[in-house]
Image (tube, rainbow, N blue to C red):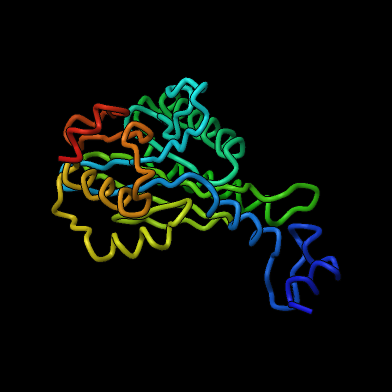
Amino acid sequence: MPVDVQHQAMGYDRTATMFSPEGKLLQVEYGEKAVRLGNSSIGMVCSDGVFILADKRIHDILIAPKSASKIYEIDEHIIASSAGIVSDGRILMEKAQLLAQQHRVTYDSEIEPEVIIRELSNIKQQFTQYGGARPFGVSILLAGINGKKPELFTSDITGNYASYLANAIGENDSVIKDKLKDRYSQKSTIKQGVKLALSIFKELKGKEFEIDKFELVYIDKDKGKLKRIEGEELKDYSK
């Protein structure tokens, strides 16, 4: 009998707080599988700012495209996307927006991107430690400007987070990361970085690639405010 099946039969996957004999939290591992089924996003730190490009993966022609946005505005200088269970991601994004608003009201200044990702990661970690609830089934890609410095962070199911120069979450994330390791350059401008990200998606999707099903949000490090581009407007970045 396979080890996974043995563990299920013995009940090690019935709660997020029960370790298997191998020292694993099986509910957390199941959540990671949900993330890899989610829509893909690529984030990059560039010489002139930072961006996130997301595959909206809309299959229903009756859905209004703008209602299926995958990149959230946390504050005018911070953006984020999630991969996995969409509703779980929405709850965490709303928490992030509230944190950013409270910081502005309390301190009359912009919150640092790392403060946001650390707080979200703390929340995710709690749901792996206490019984009665399942872990959040999402990974988060968060980008922002800290002063004049562009930053990119990723938080996983377990509540760990790290800073990146370029990263991907969601479907085919390991393949995308391998391509980024070979081609990414920190000297790239936002336009060059977006062109690279689109080319990677095009390689992965082949004939199914449709540029109007992607959305881009970037933040210029000098202006410090985000700009959203999607649909046909993205064609200028693929040239």
